[in-house]
Image (cartoon, rainbow over all chains, first blue to last red; front, side, top):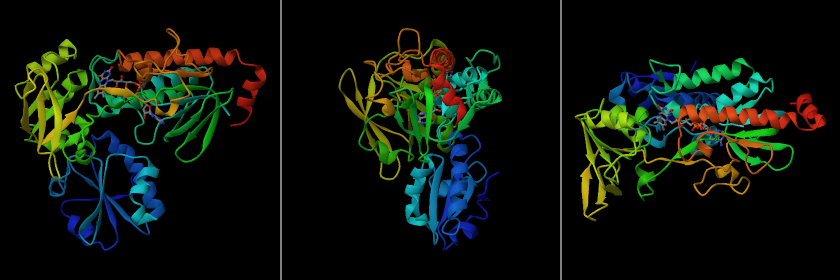
Length: 108
Length: 318
Ligand SMILES: Cc1cc2nc3c(=O)[nH]c(=O)nc-3n(C[C@H](O)[C@H](O)[C@H](O)COP(=O)(O)OP(=O)(O)OC[C@H]3O[C@@H](n4cnc5c(N)ncnc54)[C@H](O)[C@@H]3O)c2cc1C
C-alpha cells in the first residue's frame, strides 16, 4: 500500500499549490508499468525525508484536468511544487540513487 | 556466497530462475529497480506466447513467471547491478545499494535497450512529445496527430495501439517495405487512422517546450520537408545491454554477448548469457525463455563439475 496520499483535481490547489514545504506530485496511472516500479521508491524517499519534502500522487486517468494544466505527456512524471510553482521536473522511472540525486536540492 | 546469480528479470532471467530453483540451487535474481520484468512490462497483449490462447497482458505474464520462480525458492532483489567481476572461480556482483554478492556461476540476461534516433534535441524533448513507450504515454495524445518511427513488429504494434487515442498516426519508415510480420503489417495497413510515410528518415525534432514538428528527408530523392506532430514514438529497434561486461566478455560483431555454438557459455568460465542480449535475430519472449532454460542447464552442468570444496563453500554461508 502506498504511503504517498492521493490528490485530485479538486484538492490540488489546497493540498499542493498552497504548500510552502516542497511537495512532489507523482503523476501516474494504473496501466503504466514504470509508474508501478517508481511508486515504492517514492514511498521510501518519503519515509526517509518526509520532514523535508511531501510526496503525493495524482492519478492522471481520474484527474485529467491537472495533468493537462501541467502538460503531462509522459508518465511517470514527478513535479516538485513550492509556493504554487513547479521548481523541478523529473520524467521517467529511475533507480533510487538517481532519483535522490535529482531531488538533492530538497532532501540533502 | 551463492551458487547462481541471475542478472535480469525478463523472460530469459525468470525462466532460468525457474530451472535453477527447481534444481535446488536457490538462485538470487537481480531484477533491476525500475525495470523488473523486462520489456514485456511495457506492452499490452502478448498473443504469441504458447499456452495462452486468449493472449495475456505482458505485465501479467511476467508476474506469473516471477511467481513460478519464487515458488521454487528463487529470491528476487529489486536493485540494479552496477559492476561485475567475472574472472576467477568466484564472481562478484555489486548492486546500486552498494552491496556485493558472490556466486560460483552468473547468468547474464540483461536484454536490450531502446535505440535512440541520435538527434540533438532528443533528450530535451523526451517526455515532452518524444516517447519510447506507447502503452505509457499514448493516453496523453487523445485527438492528436502523432507518428511512430520504425518498420518492425513493435512499430506496427505501437501504431495500431496508438490509434485508440490519436486522430492520425503516421508510420515513418526509411525503406519502402516493412520488416514486420505479415499479420502485424496487415493490421496496420487496414487501419484507416494509420498513414505510411515511406522512404523517410527523421532529421530534426522541433519545438520549444514540446515537440511541434519533425524534419524528414526522403531517402531516395533527398528531398526534405517538415511534418507537424504532437507526438513521436520511437520504435527503431534495440541494442543489447552489454555495458556491464565490456572488456570482460567477448562480444560479436553485432554487439551481442558471444556464446559457444548453441550453448549459453560465454568467453569466461562460469558465466552464461541468455535472451535478447545474445540474440541479434529472433528476440521473442518465447525464444528468450528457451534461451534462459539453456543457460540454467549449462550452469547446473558447470556447477556439478566443480570441486566439491568450492560448492560446499557456496552452500555454507550466504
Ligand atoms: C513493445 C514491445 C512489445 C513486444 N511484444 C512481444 C510479443 O507480443 N511477443 C513476444 O514474443 N515478444 C515481444 N516483444 C519482445 C520481447 O519483449 C523480448 O524479446 C523479451 O522480453 C526478451 O527477454 P529478455 O529476458 O532477454 O530481456 P528483457 O525482457 O529486456 O529483460 C531484461 C532484464 O534485464 C534487466 N536488467 C538490465 N540491466 C540490468 C542491470 N544492470 N541490473 C539488473 N537488471 C538489469 C532489465 O531490467 C530486465 O528485467 C516485445 C517487445 C517490445 C519492446
